[in-house]
Amino acid sequence: MKLLLDANISWRITKLIESSFPACFHSKDIPVNQPAKDLEIWEYARKNNFTILTHDDDFEKLLLLKGVPPKVIILKTFNKNTKELSELLISKKETIQSFIQNEELMILEIY
Image 1 (cartoon, rainbow, N blue to C red):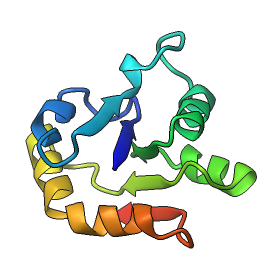
Image 2 (spheres, rainbow, N blue to C red):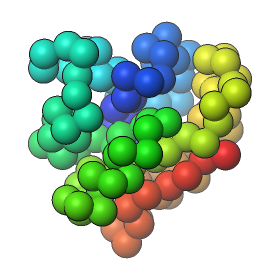
Image 3 (cartoon, rainbow, N blue to C red):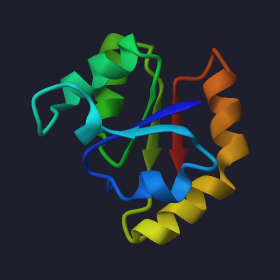
Image 4 (cartoon, rainbow, N blue to C red):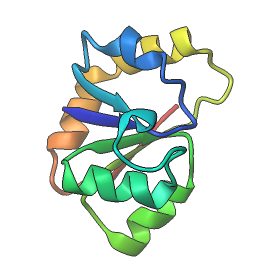
């Protein structure tokens, strides 16, 4: 279960969720010019079999234009701090795993 976090999510969260999501990377760590643009994140995720985790609705638009892969998880949780967000993701691990494994689904919203 490989997650690629968009720039709008704190890089610090990767350390907090690594035991539940060991293949989790932040967009600041991918080999593209930084800060990574949405399309660069998209292409890196597509080529490397990542699911994108974001707060950004622009990835939903890319998904509609380009299709899968990659899949997209949109967090609709703008008032949560990093610790609360990490706890939410860990609590939703089974849902996220099921979403990633289901070939018919392409977007997941987490509230």
